[in-house]
Length: 412
Image (cartoon, rainbow, N blue to C red; front, top):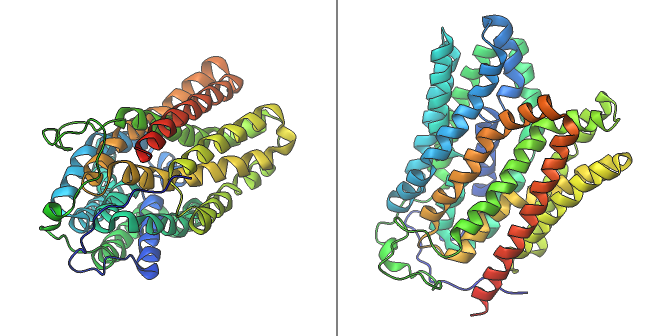
């Protein structure tokens, strides 16, 4: 198997040049808190919000799509900021902005203010979740960041498993507004300090010292901040189809299982297999895949997701296996979206490329819940599952195209 090409690295000031297990665990914890208080919050608090305010449920639920849209639009700019100023300041600021949005949400007296709160949360999401975090550690540590990315993904792999029950308990105890304030306190009081502690200070001289790896067609007159690098649109399309599938499954899985004849209680129990499957795949990648080119993980990820969806459609009697396959593939996807761009484009352009690569997947995620709802209403759940299978096949084909290009580049 092809190896990741070596690159020259500088040691960032304030860090040893090698990520630590303790630091990675802390960064994984930040993702649990931030995802729980943003992306995964609506699923638990939407009902209580609608009951207490009378606001339309579709608008309350759709506020998350607004936040994801804002996050996607800002991602390229965030990548440029990380490249210029380092990740520590950007991620600390992002976590504080999320906290500000959560406070505004807790205090919102009207629906427009509630929606504004989600805009603020979306701004923070652009600067504090997986993509900017991976961009920050990739820029800081170069190829040494691959293991750190996997360890962070392992630590945060049970985010839904932990956050949904915890959020539900908080809502019962302090209400949805109090829950938002608790998450705000965690974001500002714990996450921001952890980012400041675990991420190295920016070395302003590092940019000049790092020599980017050669890439076909990438000339010196085309700086990464203004021009897409070779193969970047293809990689963006691959990540986008994978992100759309992840969002569609998270929105529709329970309904799809019940439509296949699985009882509601069993469907909930089966869905709980996703978290362990994701973590298991990430542990295997950390143990056995660290020396292989990340393109192999991309192929495993896309193939496993497609196999899981196909099995769900054709053999619902083994839905547990379908969910395990899907969860493993999706767990690998989280790691691949950080490690593959680093292997393809190197540390020098990494933060900027990650910012650009995040835009289309986030925009796809923003529209997916609305699209799934409309297709379900017009054509039924079978049509949704069929469309998801089609997107999964497209994702496999795109992954094969990326693999062909990557392996050709690695062997050049």
